[in-house]
Amino acid sequence: MTRNRLITIPISHFCEKARWALDRAAIPYREERHLQAIHVAYARRAGGGRTVPVLVCADGAVFAESPAIVRRCDADLEPADRLYPAGPLGDETARLEAWLDAGLGPDSRLWMYQATLPAMAAMAPYILDGTARWEQRIFSGSRWALNSFIRRYLGVSATNAEAAMTRIDETFEQIGRRLADGRPYLCGDRFTAADVAFAALAAAVLVPPDYGSPLPSLEELPPAMATEVARLRAHPAGAFGLRVYEQQRRRVVSRSGP
Image 1 (cartoon, helix red, strand yellow):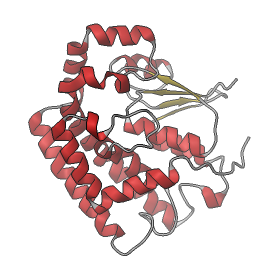
Image 2: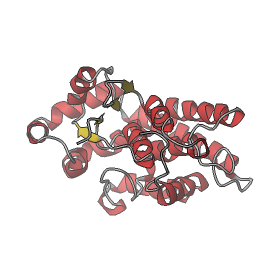
Image 3: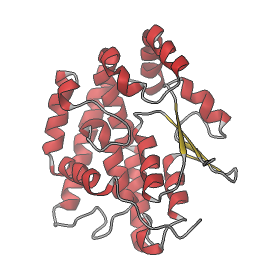
Image 4: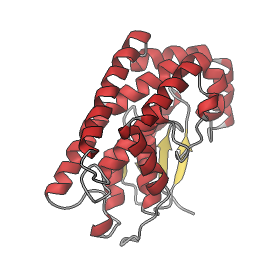
């Protein structure tokens, strides 16, 4: 039985980055899924901070934050399969990932919560997937408290969500311009951590079918959210994100490590 543990929030797109890297490298792990707010205690207990994902390895090493987990997974791969190539290409990959982590990640999360918090009861199967029964009972009796926590913790409001969507549109435009020369991936011919970062972090506004945790269908989303998701899916950057999911999310590469 594996002792690698991944502490997550099921729908979190930063957690999805970590799942993707672990799955791709065929590293066995047990995912421990928690409800928002409750996740803070488990993240800290695992050796991280207030956020997830946190990876606790069998040897006791702890990796907090998705870039550190992706790099840990890369260490077990052959050089040709690593998400951070050596040299200038690796530097470019890391810069793009950091830009997306700092911008698209928070923006898409904020917008998604503003769109879905009013429909929290309907979203319950996706919020609670894989969580403990006692956490599910807390959710059922305290949705108002969770709503308040998320809004306060992440600064979720209609005004902030509108500004976040403006920035998301700008990011999609920049990604679209980058792909306009016909390159298959963000850094050229090679699939890298930058592609994982964009696809995973854009998942909050693209709602891809191949996500690593169940997500609602377009028809199940609040109507206003569904309209925006459809619009972004039609954008060249959105189409790229969906293609990356379809072609790469379930791909497993050979490991060089144990």
